[in-house]
Image (tube, rainbow, N blue to C red; front, side, top):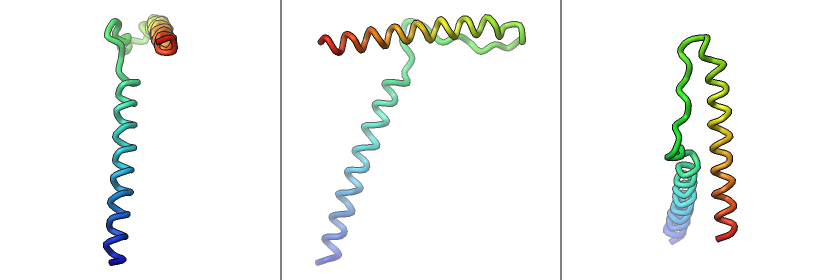
Length: 78
């Protein structure tokens, strides 16, 4: 009887852990997904392209930050 109780408790713990891990992976996929409107700049293949890549990446990150801030503001309002 005691073994049955331990087995049920173990199954409950495994279920709860599975639920927690599942929800984190869904959230991380939503956060890590790139936006549809703009693609990230391509990596430079020549040394001379590094400066332009830095500028492109900065503008891309600024644009993404603006989009996320706007989405957060809209979520707070709605």
